[in-house]
Length: 338
Image (tube, rainbow, N blue to C red; front, top):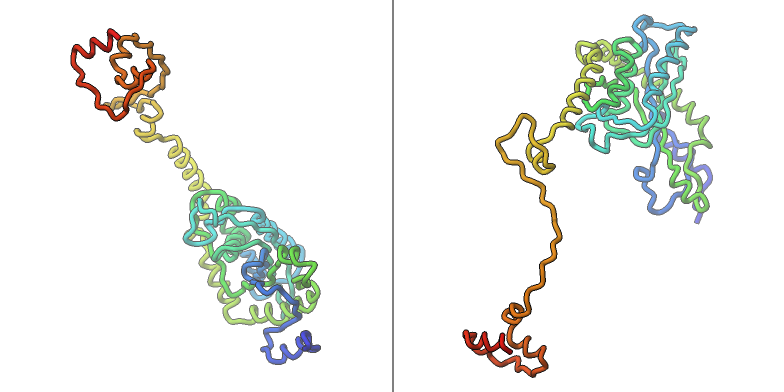
């Protein structure tokens, strides 16, 4: 049986549409699961250069020193997301204290390319995993800062504050998944299986992205008009960027106040009196005091110990089934006398 027939990739591509292409294949384990075993993901996002600055001409932007400076500043803004941060404001239905809000961003790359006489910006982000809308919101806030609509401190405020801010969401059509990385899988099975990597086909993949994926995104009717409509709607009146820092400070002060406040029940347990006085009596703390009880007189012990025990201590045989005699006054005196 031929397991690897020659020319299989070419025959597969003959049955695929023009915008889908296979470059190679490797053998994997029987229980391989691409979704569960993927430990890093790389996404791409395409923007027109004019979207980064209000002063640029939407029709055509000539490359030059200003363009390089603008792209460099935009990349610096995006790289502030790198590291582990709380992205609860960059998704929906997730609060600050939830552990799922913590995400680790490894790297942001920003480059430009020319197509049909126009300059475009390609953003690539590498991370372990991403939340719903996270990448689009990261790009959206970075564009707002680059255009001067939002202060630059809004980015770190949104990452550090417990408040949930209204972060702008960039359009979805320029976003696509570029690569799935399987470092842990490759390390575990490197002796028995081929490495799962696109490095052997990187040149072909980059040409395919530029000629098929990026060009199709740019040529779509929604690209320029969709981004223009979104940018016009990203305003301070809608998102209140200028108020974020003050709102974060106010929330921090209120949070400290909540931590210092103690309920009456808690103060009662700690033995503190409530500020301003309270009609409720404060329960004193209970302390365990060890005491030694003095030994009782011998006569009292004899009166308290059952007759069977007293007689057994004297060496007399006592029938355990015998019923004790009625405890009369004479008998008690007799026991004491004995």
